[in-house]
Image (cartoon, rainbow, N blue to C red):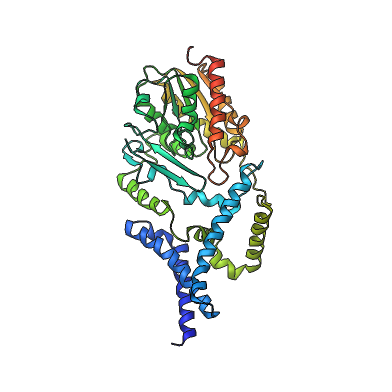
Length: 416
């Protein structure tokens, strides 16, 4: 083979390996050794690709090897721009970065925190601790003996129990910054943060049934749009929907390891995969160039992308189904807890009013005088959410805690 042929083979080999990593990445998610193989394959593919291109253009070896590093640095810096430009914007426009949620390390499947549960699918591993890190946060998690992100003292007959998913658990904030912890501090009463990432109302009900409730005067129940699937599946007669087997849990935990921590060229790989650049650079080169130019322009200006993502506004028919299955799960809570309940709705990046209004309408039919609603859409602003991750940040938790304290005092929910 001639030198030019070797260079062409090097380019083709890098392109092929990168295509496998982009379009067949699922084959690497089943075993620990294939996870490591993937994390080696990605940087190796980029190095081969640019080494071949660079040598074909007769560039020095060091410059060829430096190009992937420069590309990765550029990708990282652009991500930081997207975060910074949107932090105080009235509306978040992060473009393709809204797909980063599929690349996050998921707490409940993280090897440091994951623990299988036959009826709940998973709890956080009792007495575990560690760091949970992503683009916009780095937080320590300390899990108590029950598998909750709180201390053991809070397990002993708390007066307030917080039920919910990752928002309640405090995804993206330190333990002392969660609205559960802040309410406890501000009111001076014992409270238990029983929020676990991805739990729907049905599993929150199951979890609450296992908690000491003798002194519980108030439950703060947080709902998220993705609760519907679980609530619907688990409330249908004879349905075992969404129950995790030990094998499925183990497989998901292995899959999650692909997103645990940084590996070389991770950020560049994200853009190549999510923008489908390996195909589109050939089929739509002009459009790709325009998208890159728009991103660079926003970067230079220090502003969010000049696009408008329509808000996810749910129709009355959609909110009716959410409300119906939420209240079926709530009815099961009422079988063993008759005290006060505050219901609030939180969703990623923005919390719209449609859901809580539907719950309020449904609640009036129930004639439950110990059921209250907190309109969080009137409390939170865009700057209270992480632009890319979508969870509420420390400021958002502080705002929610203040509103909860005011509602608890106004309605005398700890004494009535």
